[in-house]
Image (cartoon, rainbow over all chains, first blue to last red; front, top):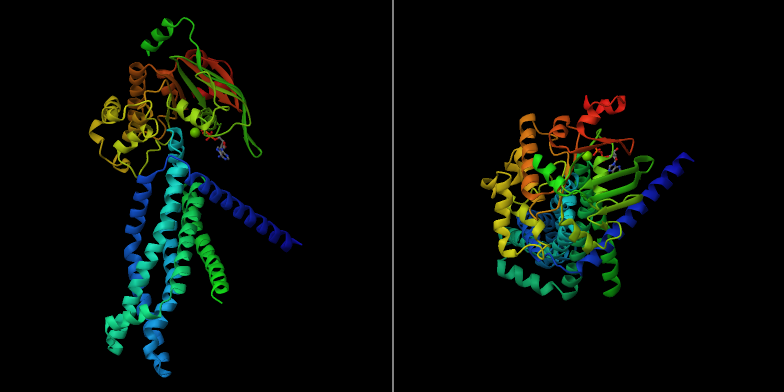
Length: 259
Length: 255
Ligand SMILES: Nc1ncnc2c1ncn2[C@@H]1O[C@H](COP(=O)(O)OP(=O)(O)O)[C@@H](O)[C@H]1O
Ligand SMILES: [Mg+2]
């Protein structure tokens, strides 16, 4: 009895939260199309996000490509299929591993940053101050950030994928004396439209999720400094979960389409 | 202060610029405001005193439309703020300066950008060519023109409060609301802020509502006082009247 009531409570609070996030997203879609548009702030956010995560995404991507290739080489060699390396690596990285890993990294880097920043602005009444001075804080802070993550994540993923392939090519060059040119020729031969398009569409949704949850948690942060930490932490945890859900849905849908 | 009194005497029949009637606000079971009333007259310095957590900030947030009261009416400069559309409310807000409890400077912007911020959307009230002049003028009236390109984090608490004050008066409001202007400052800096508030009063001829629990601040600056207790305006009068009251609950405020 006790167990079930606790479970019910948990479910109720979960669905309440989902409802609140949905409302928040609804407000985003209402306000994103209404004037005035905070273009300068959007550019500033895009620049900041790119600037802050480019190195991290690059390093992660490089190691990802390196490790992935090193690990798969022996198996492929065993089957005498070493020549398949570029196509295997590129398909798995571009389709799945790249977007998911880089989105997770960005959830940690960008999502938590947004949660902490908006949370501290809420706690120190900066959001109220904006409202009082006639600027819609939702539009100025939230709309620009969600748009920025939605636009920047695909770019970061493409960049990270490319660096990962570079890492993989380096391993092939050293271990298998495959030239970079040959490697990338094979990569582009094996990558289809049907690999790239769904993967890229997916990353827009990843970016949207990172911005949405980060902003939701920060904007509705509770009073006190503890609230800021909670907002930032919760942003990462919930975003990561949401990323996997979106990924599952995306794979499911593209599976239907390309059956 | 004398000037303010003259200012009142020039208006034999001063009209209220703010009128709050029967304000109720609760959070769940916590009843914060329980039928609160307040009238701020033109040119007046009204001090609102109350214990920490008694609902002073809640009241002032209802007043500026940041929070919606459960019931009651709030009139500012003849407008019922609960009935205004967003745009009308924003326009009315240009007539009201608000000094937040913790300064609330935008910490990702320089002092200059902080002061320019209120002018972004109120281009009908200010000529955009003059923003630089206005920023400088406001900073000069708080004695901080040299800090114009610094970030808030580079300023001391007292300087932050001054910049926040400059930001509150950049649009030359008719009313300034001060939420605990001296809290968190050392006594000397607090005194400086009080003097600054009085000089601003003189220069801009504003009506002020000052929330504080600083007795010294109340003594120096108030024309009239209201004590907030249990969610209502428990007592009203001049500083002299209230500080010599026999009511122990009123007495407690002046200890
Ligand atoms: N947004 C809110 N949600 C719930 N409770 C609140 C909220 N804002 C204020 N309160 C509560 O209302 C009471 C009055 O708060 P406040 O007006 O900030 O006090 P003060 O008089 O010190 O400014 C406090 O008990 C506070 O916890
Ligand atoms: Mg307060």
